[in-house]
Image 1 (cartoon, rainbow, N blue to C red):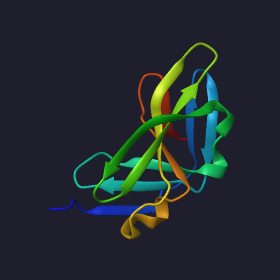
Image 2 (spheres, rainbow, N blue to C red):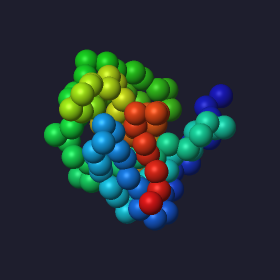
Image 3 (cartoon, one colour):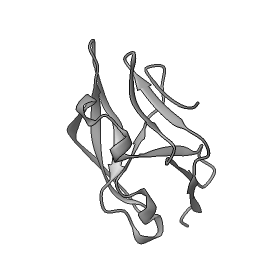
Image 4 (tube, helix red, strand yellow):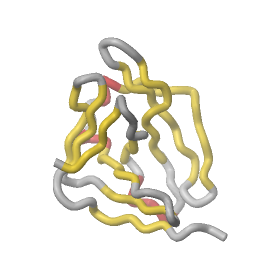
Length: 114
């Protein structure tokens, strides 16, 4: 059974940081909730400094969202492999996340509301 997926506008301003740099800030982020998983913030691509991202060969497929392509974050001191993903042609039910990027939050990548 497919999990219930909801997509809403994420209230306020959201920022993503890695390696001491702000990669992006958005007032137009989306919040995707899938089943009982924690919410994921999707940033519009135009709000992200794409110069920090290198496209990866890694790819996954979700039966409910579609094929995801991945990017690595390149900082001054390291490369954070496959930390960013995007659904270039998402399933119709989640079409709002097209042209958006999501980030795996960790001790090296912060996704937060400011």
